[in-house]
Length: 205
Image (cartoon, rainbow, N blue to C red; front, side):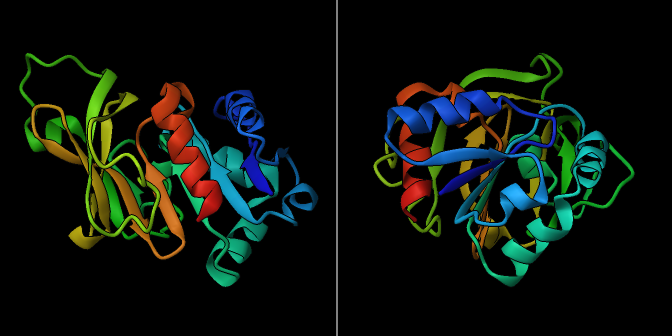
């Protein structure tokens, strides 16, 4: 069962519809009880780092989410801000992230993206998978394109945790992984057949 964490952020319906079209069992969880039987977890998110963490705390699901991911090693993929809150800190906020993949979230200007490039980074971009994704990008090794909407990027403490890169003025990590925890900066639920294949791969990990 794929469980989409519905803590008030992200297009939950889009994930459920994609999995329904693939005949993959999926549901939304709004409470800890609904999260209890999760075998794979999608942690979506849009908006700001601190706000996402506040809503996750308010949902009452965070302690069980931590138990399942950190203790039971249930696979999880964070999407967009859901990826960013996997980090320790963010230049966007003051709060502490989940810390599941050590690193910090930086503003694009931190890596001197040319001022001529508009922010947020919005639209389709090529994605280059790297070794170590454990199958998340199976079938997407060449010519994969995904939809992005963000002004911040994930800087891994250990570069080996990067599993895909994209370029916007300069290369940046657009997908990360450590153990059973993945994060993708782009929106697979908005990325047509590329996103569908990635979500299917996650269901089959």
